[in-house]
Length: 435
Image (cartoon, rainbow, N blue to C red):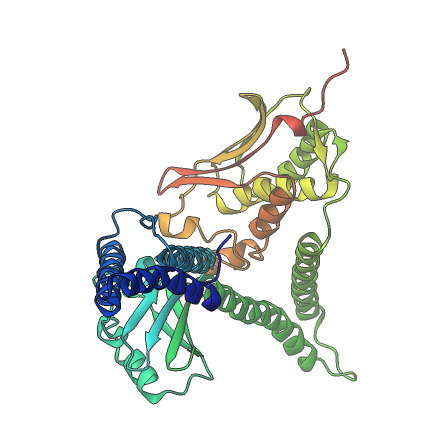
């Protein structure tokens, strides 16, 4: 425990030191000489202690102070405790800074702290990756000199940061970055950079979706409206013309009905919770029903349909949803394969998984289209798709159904040789046969 120096104790020590010297000086007849010698000795001793203190503070070969004597013992001890408190505070401050940096590194956005002149004070690791900065080389550099974009320079110079700035990233192709700037501390700015590429893509997909739905519905409505405007209540068209008009209107109405039903189906699958996904499904029986429907649809095309079905392979899931996924792939193969082609449908156990695939020898699909096939209304050949009656929603529905059943759609294709659409279900989805 640190002891505070007491004035009374100091005076008492001086009195005990000088009194014997004074008495001896009186006895020998030279009191002032002895007092002078005593004072000089005390002064030399204090200078020696002061030198030890100065040497320890400057060189400090050890954290512990030298052994002090008398009043200097409290001085050394007091300085030692003061250093100990300062070191403790420095450690606490260093720990606080470390936790702040760890928190800044955990932020999923790039963060850059700037001075008022836009020079870089600090940035997290993600900023190095996203903005191409180098640390500590770029410390003190102006950010607008490192991001060579006139739009960014004007934005920072204007100083109006209510609205964020969106820029294409020059370091990564097709990446869009959002810059948000806010005041930080008294004279600094914090720049938060977020990757909004996915959001922009979703926004574009939404716009495309609305445009495609409007187009898909407008075409049949235009046809029906046109025929209805030709008809007069007092004067009906000739029977031959009426039969053609009736068949065309009926066909277009069925097309609209199918489109609306598929939109409702997709909305229901996306919005509903996972439920009834653990019911046993007789997949071979389901595929036989689909086979019958496929043969009926295939009468005009004349494809060679081959179904390789394992009659003992059942899975657990939602029957209506899975029937939609299976049938969409089979019917798509029939619709988009040229007449006289060959289509092989396989449902077999493969490496412990339940594996389904549809192979055809059609025209194939170019690589740039494959990743976008499951987007709503996306078509490789719009004219051909409308001729075959496709709505552009089948694969989107299939994708969401498989996601709800912990699976995914795999597409492989080669131009001029055909395509393969497949998916698999894990072992926990299989229905165990009774022994």
